[in-house]
Length: 306
Image (tube, rainbow, N blue to C red):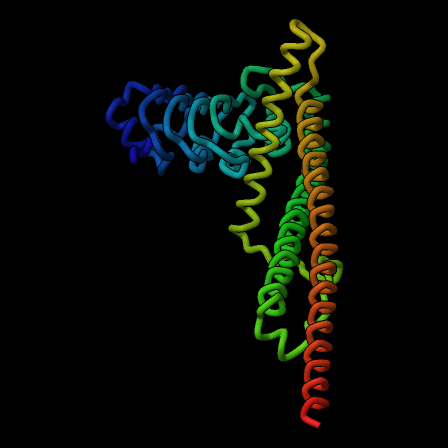
């Protein structure tokens, strides 16, 4: 753990009162700084081990900040920059955050006063689209989470049906003692009622929800990379999708894959339900035949005794 203040005190020449440069200094966090460092308007913190920009708001006159190639993962990790009203130029490329869906839109929605992000000028059109992109992403994420929860419930229902069928065979099959004592019931798992009443999504804890959302986000990023490679191979030199369009396509592809999985699981549930019904019918018919056979044998024995 190396605070920024320690790195600066070890090498005071890195700050001249206007510009601060602590590049590749293994800095892990921005702690409280001595007053002589806080007046800098230009701050370079690239190639360190920062996981958050908390503390950057100490630079009240901050206009230019480079925090490229650090370990910043979420937009929430840069919220301290909301308290830097003069910030115009920001560099975050090389951080995990920069790989997230609609990364530029996320940052611009958070910091609408930026004029440049990662060396690219921010246009009025891009700034206007940022909020729309974030809203669309939130809607897609909600649908994907709902789909993921439905996949979980359908998979559970399919396993439950198979388990019930196996239990029936074990309890009422040939040679089973239970079959000699009672007839098997024909009651099946009410899958529709189970799906309707089981609020799996509502029962998720914060950590479970975050884990599912993280997995979905990683899948979107993976599909986006595949699309980028495919587009580059098919259309070298031009005709590529814009950043926002490519993320929209990636989200659509992931949701389409989820729908295919849901369809397959519904077919599996229907097949399991039909198989369970056949099993129950066969066992019931077999048990009834056995009972009739025992009754006939008893009556025959009674006649012989007479």
